[in-house]
Image (cartoon, rainbow, N blue to C red):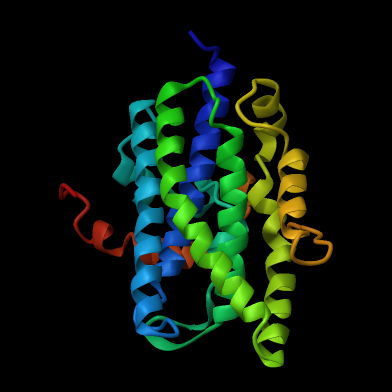
Length: 258
């Protein structure tokens, strides 16, 4: 029997993993019909669907752990109760999907590539975690995620080595993403306990692995949390707007079974 502290920290970690994938899947879905070409439209839609599926696995596990129904966790929590990193909630660009969308493909490529690499490093760090149901989910997700990594790595490499304009746009996107990338590696206020209980390795260890991987390709990276630590419920207004859209159908008939 695990201690109450262990269970509380494990649940917090699962929320972080779930909310990250849930919100980024939504941002990815906003590119439907707007991607650079039809093949990418299909591929990106598939990746976003995978991310939503990963989030659903985590939410189902939280439901089993007594946190409430998965639909309630996704559609009835307010923004301050979400534990996603701020980076994943930022909009794709200016405008909205239905009103003059002017999205930034360079930002999207960098965000998704850096997030996917960070996600791989995080999941690799908890594969030996002793809670078996989470272990099984992580193993399943890791298989699918390898394809996501290849996809975004190809885009990243192509744009960085394309025209001078593409390179400038990518470098600007890298700077923007790095400003909040530190939040992806944060564990929030329970971080010290998570590490002490061997749920996951320390934040700085994982950051160093990320930097070592990218330094094979680029120069030194410095990560920040410019807009706050989402793990502690600090978010931008962009998250509130996203949650309203995500829960619109659910909230229209809250008594229905979804």
